[in-house]
Image 1 (cartoon, rainbow over the protein chains, first blue to last red):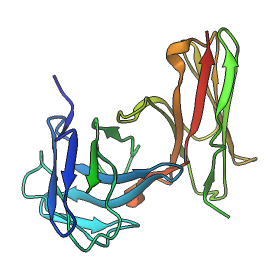
Image 2: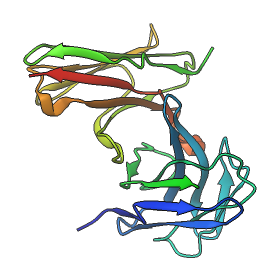
Image 3: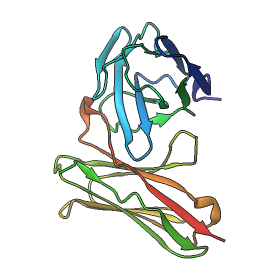
Length: 114
Length: 111
C-alpha cells in the first residue's frame, strides 16, 4: 500500500522537552511538508523540503527543526523554544514542488504539552 | 485582507439537500484549486482538483472555479450523513510556493 504514515498518533510532552514526530512516505514523492492545525486557524506551513538534504522555512518555523536525509522520511522536532506546541501536526507530500502541487496528507499526530 | 477566505460554519443541512461550499481569494495568480475533506482527528483527503476556470464533476461532487470573480465552489448533491466533515479549499500559483489553505467549513448533514 502506498501512502504517508505518521507516528505516534498521540504524543504527550512535558514543558522543556524536545520531541520528534515521524513522517514516512512510500509514494516516491520528491516534496514533503509539515503543517500545524489549530482550531479555527486552518493549516499553517512549518517547513517544507523539495529534495533530499534541503528544506525551507514556512510561515511558522520558529521553535521547530527538520531534517531530510532520505527521500522517504521528513521528521519534525518540536523544541522547547516553541511557546505553544499543543496542536495537531500534519505531514504531506507531493510528486514534486511545482507543476500541480497536489498534496497528500498523512493521518496526523496530536501533540499535547502537559 | 486574507489571501483565502472561507466561512467556518457550521453549515447544517438535511440529508438529501444540495450543499454549496465556497471560498474567495485575492491573489489573481492562483491557478490550481483543490478541495480537501477532513474528518475529525484525521488528515485531509483530496476530493477535487481543478486547473484554471471551469467545472469538474466527480460523482456527487462538482467543483467550480470563476477566476474573474476570484471565487471557487464545491457542490455536493444528494448529501449523506457520511459527508459530515470539514471541507478545506486550497490553491496555488504553481511552482515551489506550495498551497494556501482556507480555514475550512464545518459541514453537518442531518439524518
